Image 1: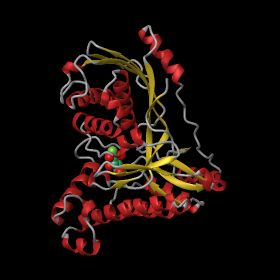
Image 2: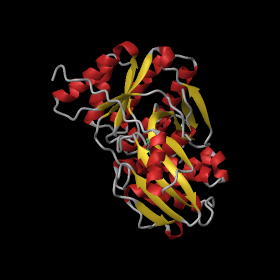
Image 3: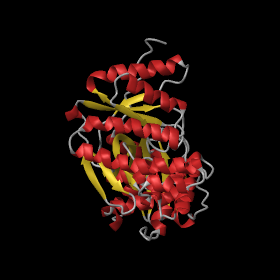
Image 4: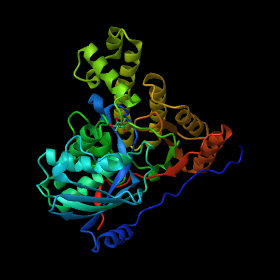
Length: 401
Ligand code: GAF
């Protein structure tokens, strides 16, 4: 397999004007506007959000783009470039938590439902929507949250809802759509990242208080690149028996056994761990508590301009997810190990785990070598080559036209 081509992929970018044209072709008039909500990678703080902990995501340049025109007849029509011939229609009055809207469109219907439940959607508020995405699905890059957040922001803007000025409140509604409507028991990380990140920064978010601050992530100035390696092993969070849901349950049981409201509140591992009879729960606690410390450490280094030094934290985090939290896969481990061996300052899986993507912090002059080494390592095992992309910290959800 030596000499297998580096798999760097130029992602297809969606042009706002082209999407507006597609809308006009479908509906006979241009849309009221075009909006974009990005996917994310989390730099540190995995499975800490639902433990009331800290996270550190950045927005990706890729996401969901959406053209929308508001209507007042309560009807919603959705067309997706990814689902040709699968247009979906529903009426907001018919939505309840067991609505017949399923599959990809349930993320859209869930947002209408959650916005209405929260008292923000006036009766009759509907929409015509045409959307497109350049985010891979199932790559742990938050394609679901990007869809939810694009729909909610466009809806709030186009209908002039007060909500449009309150990003944390929007994140909560988008999360509720995913938890209560779609049925995926996720935390607040992904929706916050899509709605609250800013260009050139990571979002340092306290998931207990909802307070966030934007931390400069000066990759270019530091001569570094962030490489995203999508292993193409699809992860999914959806059902209540998924590994993700099992981890949530383990964390809740550990917090209960330790008598704390959430694992965020464990202050001293040396006294806490011996109080747990179950060694598996002890491992889970060790990951969550040390991971929260790694978020603080990464933020300190980024604020001090020592961006390259977060690489060591990346790798420590990956080992914790592999060995203590047990959410990695052989493909993620191979991507991480190979990237580090080929010169990355550090690497880790990102997102929920059980598949999806890993990230590596790579000096400019090692990028080609790291990409090639990763492609070669996968080729040598006969595994599907990862999709490798480089990304800068990008703007959060916004109106484009
Ligand atoms: C997924 C979930 F959606 C997030 O809430 C978070 O728990 C993450 O996995 C792990 O950090 O993306």
